[in-house]
Image 1 (cartoon, rainbow, N blue to C red):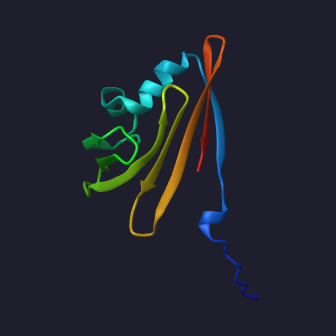
Image 2 (cartoon, rainbow, N blue to C red):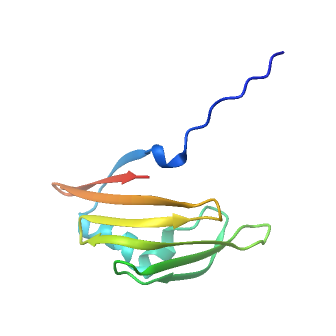
Amino acid sequence: MVARTAKAEPVADRTLSIERVFDAPRELVFKAWTDPDHVRQWWVPKGFSLVSLEMDLRPGGEWRRCIRPPEGADRMTHGFYKEIVEPERLAFTYVIDARGALRATKRWSQLLSQTSAQRRR
């Protein structure tokens, strides 16, 4: 068997786009991302528990989240808010570890009684 090495592209050159439609007004979907009481209800992987959540929701403000998996070793994530346009757009960085930060942008468009949510990383 011949081994081959694939050339890796820098992560900064890649973009992931996801679109999803929610049966809710965009003001509520925006609040689900920006109100700590809402965020605590859903931003934890299945089987994990939320240890702490801090959100300084303003451009330049920092967010921090600590989650605990079933095996018990806490995992910290954090980032900074870059842009906030209520209820249309939220841009922030997402740092998992020392490998670097992702920039995420959420956009919400009203579709009658539904909301189209677009996410880019």
